[in-house]
Image (cartoon, rainbow, N blue to C red; front, side):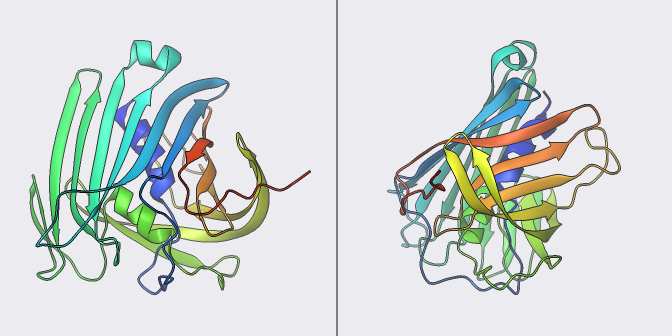
Length: 258
């Protein structure tokens, strides 16, 4: 289990329907106190777990209040024995605009360690990180703030095959991902069966993914807009992300009744 697979766990949670043209809804889909948990499975084995929680922050940015979002990812079972991972990702966002003020990560992956601290200056359109300064235009996010911002986008008029763009900052620059809307499906996870929106984010082939690997992501088609499942093909086998717990939601989960 290397660092790219753990990053994928967070990426699957973040890769929502985001584009510069998509409009944000007036109603925020989450609240302080929310906590969601995912399990990442490789075949029959649980490879990793991620817990993402939202809380009010006592820290202010230029006098403005902030929401503090924390994601902890760790390996599990046999994977924890052979390649122990303990990663933490944090972001502080404006509770109204949902844009990020500050992001930091602390990754411990076997003998590898990495930290990064990122400040977003939306007035000057500049990102300051450990590896330098990066100018930007439009809205750019980190992993976590992208996830929470995108949960509030109006995707009610999406048509199958339409493509959206995600722009996020990671380590050494601003990156973009194309996401295709693939329709609506009923999908089962540990918490029940839900009506979902289905998406197909683009994958870059490499050491982990095959040239024709496919990544599919299912998000609840309700006011919560929580990703409940993802499936990605690897060079050997596949990974499945599954929602295993959800607490403190702003809106009740609405599984399909049998």
